Length: 238
Image (cartoon, rainbow, N blue to C red; front, top):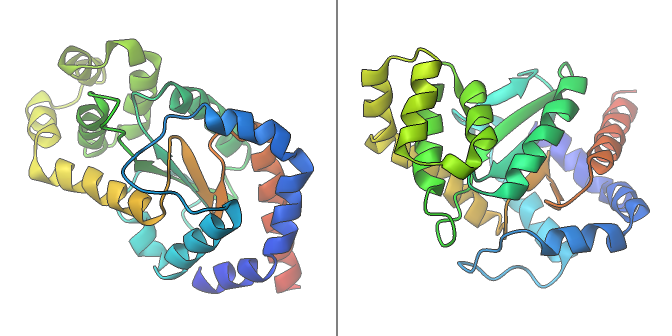
């Protein structure tokens, strides 16, 4: 994986051309709508931020980056898409629908990784919902629980967390123990620290291999970038 990222860095210009083809005029208004974090100062330019993301991603091996995070798709895929998300963020709920279709269309060729990025300054239920989803994941039901949280986003709270778990026939004693555990808190914190290392400023944020994708990017941009990366990988192999 590290070798592939190194190769992708060499062709970064191709990928920036792909971004430019969509047009900053389309992307920037969407990005400005995203919830912002005040905990860190963003890099001065998009290019500087991309360089930082590339450095951070390149400094870790694949297993460290993915960790025990929930995933979909092909575990051995060369294309890895990370989504940093908050269950109380309305834009994340919209993006979840887009990602379900995008990942479903490329299930054999992509590994989709969910990372928690709770915006605690503006979302009081961000951490508790993330920990509830983590608890559901301990019983193999993260993605169904994930969908339930986004569909019922206006009801986030203990009553909903329990209701969803019961509807999924989870072991309730384990679920309630897990969602309030030190392990749940540590898992969410680990994802948050990675987001901070990447200096992500809002949710949702995406990184495909080592390429930072604006959270307000339209679905077709993901397709374009995915195709560019695949073409590059195929040319390297050829």
